[in-house]
Length: 270
Image 1 (cartoon, rainbow, N blue to C red):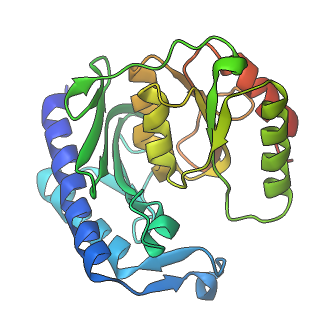
Image 2: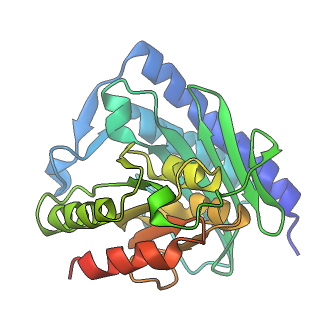
Image 3: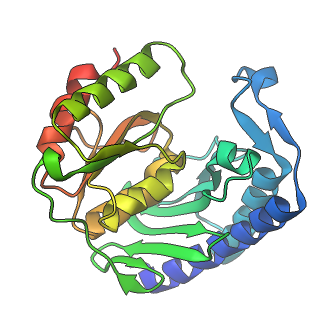
C-alpha cells in the first residue's frame, strides 16, 4: 500500500511550489487572457501564472511518482480520471480574484487512489496558509486539527455559494436557491470566488454550507476530502455522490445537509 505520509509531503511541496509562482506574479503583475478564442467566455481567464504553476507542479509530481496520472485545469485535461493513482490539480483556483488583485486564491491538489480521495492539500499563498487532509487522519489548517460547526438549523447558518460562468439558466437557478435560503432566516450568504477555499471554510466551521451548480473536478478534489475528514458531508446538488468530473457540489457540516440539498435539489438546473 502506498505511503500516504509521503504522498502528503509531496502534495504540500507541490502546492507551495505552485503557490510561490502565483505569489511572484501577483506581486509583480501579470497580463490575463480570456479563453474566448478557445470557445470559452470573455470572463473565463487564464495567464502565464496559472500555466507556469501547473507546469511546475506537474514536474514535481512526475519526478516523485512517474507512473501516476495527472489531471488538471490547463494543459492536463486529458488525464485518465479512472487511473489507479491520480493527482487532480488546480494550479490557480480563484483566477478572477487573482486578475483583480484580490488576495483570495489558492492552489489545490488532490490525490486519488482507485477513484477514492486519499490526500488533499490546498494552499493560500498570500497568507501562507496550508489546509491538508488525509483519509482517516483528519483535516488540518497549518497543522492544527479543525472541525465543522455544530449548527443544527438553517437559522444558525452562514452559507457560501459560487456562480459558474453561465449567465443564463444556471445563474437564475443559483439566485433562486439563494432566495429560498434567506427565507429560512440564515445569517447570510457569502460569495468569495474560490471554491477550494470555500470548502475549507466549511471544514473549519466558518461556513455551515456551500453550494455551486457547476464545478470541475480540480475545484473540489482536495476540498471534498477536507470536508469529510473535518466531520462534514459533501454531495452533488441532488444529494448523490460526487463523480471525478464536472458536477454540482453541496458541502455542509453534516447536520444541515438534508436541509440545504432540499433547496439546491429544487432549483437544480435541468
